[in-house]
Image (cartoon, rainbow, N blue to C red; front, side, top):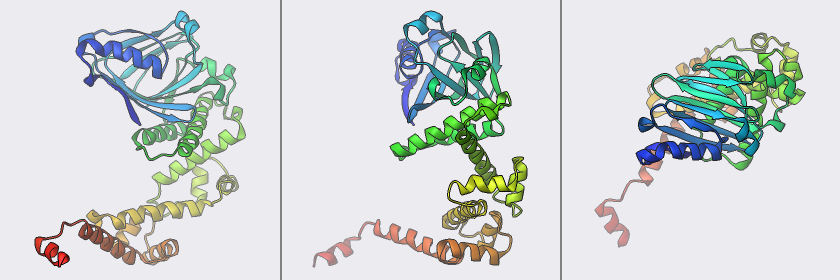
Length: 342
């Protein structure tokens, strides 16, 4: 995610005008009122995910209005879904007036007038996902009544959406264009599922969107419960109110199995911990038990199958690799330099 604007870099008299100009370009055109313009600070970072844009924004107190006149002048026809991360924020749209707090998700539409505000002392921040209305895989008749309302606290698929946006906001610049396109599709499906879930209409989603949202919700659940040795397909299916058969089908369409995915994620965590210099004093068996392998023999067998070596061998190889890298990067001594020149 790259920084679009940080008002710290602007002169005091340019902060509010700079914010207005940048939001008009990166988001939508609005009119601002700043209760304390002399102390106003704001920051925006953005990431393009194909036709979807993710923005991380924070700002001091303000009131932002999008009027009918501004809409007539310019309307990119976007849906915007915000996950509130700090502060209290108000939104008024389509005869709804809502105050949202951290953890809540709010929906609004660039084609309808709205008033948004940052409430209370301190700064407010949110993760804002925006995308063309034409990409929303739900009918406008279902979405429109929800504009200007809270979609609730981020739980279930909403929690997966929030976690996905947080991870993307922290991502570096190593994502390829293909990665960004795929991730944009995933978060769009999650956003649509969060909207549909608000009115208990997940059946209105296209099958592929329902499947992707369910898969992301399931893998998020698995990630949070990898330490549990009892994490089996039956437990995963029960947690999501689906049959084990449906669960297996979700993973089969992606070329893997439930047990295979669980094993892959557990081994990845074990490899990370075994390679961590700060954990070299931790017994190998403890690392295995930490990630769902209470029996050392089961851990050794699973790890050898996945990596071709025992956990102790893997840890030793990682230590030698680190030492070798450090040795190659060490400057030569004066004596070594003289010997090399002879």
